[in-house]
Image 1 (cartoon, helix red, strand yellow):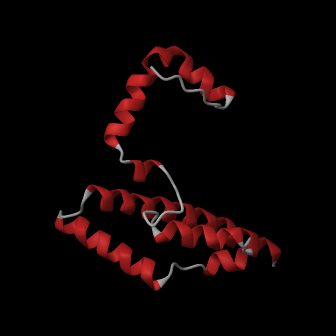
Image 2: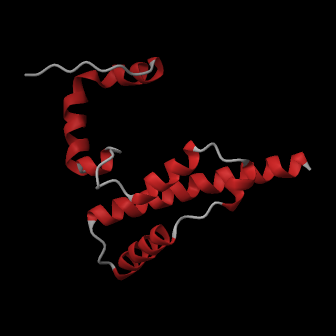
Length: 125
């Protein structure tokens, strides 16, 4: 049997302590319910374009005004509409559903960023 060593924050280590004996089983279940694609963010072609687009925007350290005006590309918007339609029709695949989850998570994050940006803009005036 292989042995793995990982570093985790102290808080997480404390939370994991009571279930240490179950970690192999829990990790196995995690891998069975999620594909490697949904668990990682890599530079491969499997990475949804929206991730790259979002990260490219943030890496430029946008101003509050730029955050408030941010919109995803036409390509990302078209892909989102396609995924939503497949979801409505009940024909969405597991991989597409995972991708749709990513869009939803990033949308929620962007809503929070824009709210903060509007607050900063308002206070600067």
